Image (cartoon, rainbow, N blue to C red; front, side):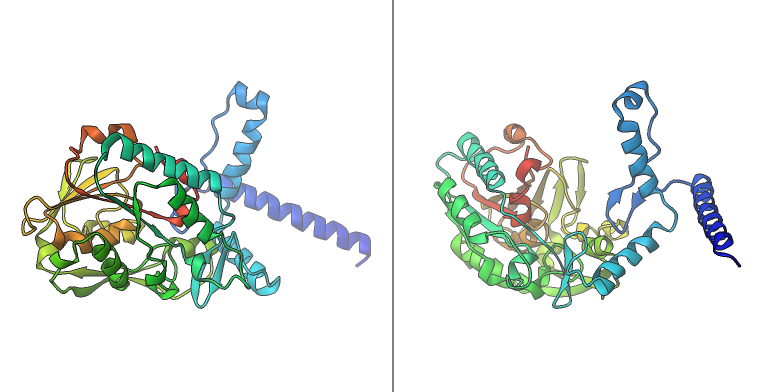
Length: 364
């Protein structure tokens, strides 16, 4: 076979493959959600004159065709394998494997974001918490525990310093030293509830409610799951396991969700059918909930301004309070808080992860 004939055959085969992929994609039903990546996939773009003129239609179609490509998950896994195993890159999409744990690079420190976060917190204090004792703590992301000789990371000490300089009317409760990388899920961003006792002891001691906590917990394995990083990195890892800490007090407590006007338990077993199994803790992300403990000391109340890390931590405070209110200003406007909470003499705790603080544009 001559070189010319070979070139024709190769070119024809390549074009045939492209056409077949195009036809199969056209005939395949679009997928709405990538459960591995925990996000909605782009759908066929709406064609308008405006989009044709400003060029955005082409961009939208590129996103659509990429998201809806057949065998997309297989190609993602192949890409990750090539990046990590063949080309020997340390990370793929800023996620890497370190000591058998999937970790996301958090870099650099966004000082503007940290200042924005403290401004939001100060505004809440000025509007609602005048004269009340307020505490705050910071949850380190997994990248904090990684050797800086191997991977870059944000300046965590500087973050603490900025927070301390800007939040002068609050007491800081440091918990970085209460945690290790093994206290977090292998495939997910979050920490394991069953490993939080040191952090619980530190916070309860500083906030003076440790003397109201006497009951031990029974630990129950609930379900295996793949966390958000497993889908994003697209490499095979060991599965994680949801384990809840419970006792009679937690089982008798009730949770009221103001968004859907629904009462549930602290551990919402219905969420085990959802994509994110971590939502078993207090039913997942929501603007405002209250935990009512009928066995708690009357008049002892706690208000927590939080992100998702508090969902598994705060239940371990339940014994010390008759009522705990959790507010998430990523989903609720700060100016609306007073419509739902009457601030009097509650304990106040702000708890945010370094990831959220470094991306505080989500605060409302």
